Image 1 (tube, rainbow, N blue to C red):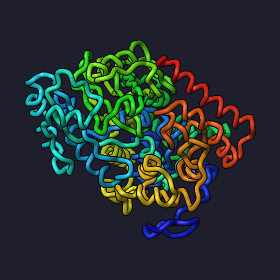
Image 2: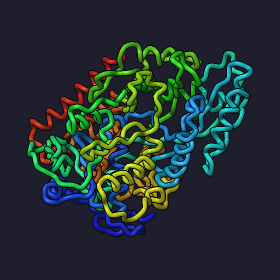
Image 3: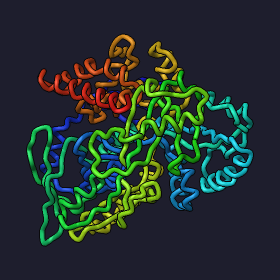
Image 4: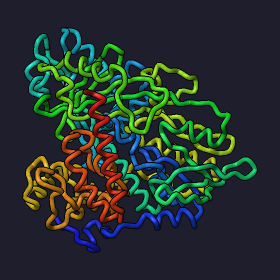
Length: 550
């Protein structure tokens, strides 16, 4: 495989720009140019819509108040799936759409989206045929998907797939396939792709107010949170894709509007693979509160999640509340041979589902995960609800509506379903072997690099990358790439969303704070005061996360 050097053209025909396309240039474009579409909110829906719109040829801008995927889009259960539990709710259209999108992602971003085998355990004699009926329908709804169909397995086969499973009373089970992914890295890749297609992309930019003419939105006043400067941007139509903040944005447009959000919190506990040994995932089909729980291998650790807790006032850094931690421990231990305890938890992360319920339904586990598009009298187009699995189709539908509301000229049709993402060209699951050989690192390290960067890995690392520190399996060049090409502006941006270490190992994350901050300070020209503030913010976050489950 060819290793791309600075300003060299790869076989794919793309020049890697190792010099950062400076954020100030993006801000300058926001200030000086007018747009067809302005997207507010850089999660999966917003980044996906900006990418779709730019690829269709529309002059597009994407802004995000914090960091891309800093909200719900980085705190998912890491699954691209149809949702087995939706079978009981007869949401067949949603399941089929999600499974169709699953196949596209497996093909278009194979370094970030992987097939994942699940074990559904059976502890009663009738459970295998009972669940088999549902999974047969699930397989059929996958239509032209290429993953294997479900299969009935014996007790020994179930144990072979999920070693940590409770063996007493186990009859066997069923195995089936879905997919898992790296959510924040896919989100950042969408923002990168939008910029490569010509969109203006900037994080740390906040919507202050709308600009209206004759009662219709014609632009917005934005604030650059790095410089505190406020400036106007003019556009033909605006998309509100701010997740759990959609009602806040809607009220900036019309203070009299009613709330449509019914937010729900889901927590995830993280353990070592030594504590919960498994090579496949396990689904716990029904919990005491009537939902499902997953135990999933991810990032060389194991995730146990999730809950579904209605929450009235979600914060920017949500934490477990009430008995959520104990609920997951109790639920998981019913199916594990060796119980896990709070002392075994390595990290915790919490996501807020931006569920849309115009009727005010607060039974969040029964609210549909289908997306909703709302258009205000002034022309603000809001998309809420939905799930990561269908983000691409959601973005397509949103752009179609933006074209209609903004009275934009119809240009190219949506083509994102056929797009090969950066890092996917010529990708192979054996790429890690070349990474091992090139950089003389172990297999686990090499596989992480493969799964983060795909075939861009050699461009990212160069010839002789330098470790961040002793016992830290990350390279300095990865941090530089996060700043230059992936919009990272802070230590948390790197540790939580470019790397995922803050989500899986708080102790190692704390060890990485200073070396990461040192590189960022150099690249972003921080003063010592800023560097110390960044370091302190991450230390405080780690401490609050630890306290939340201890």
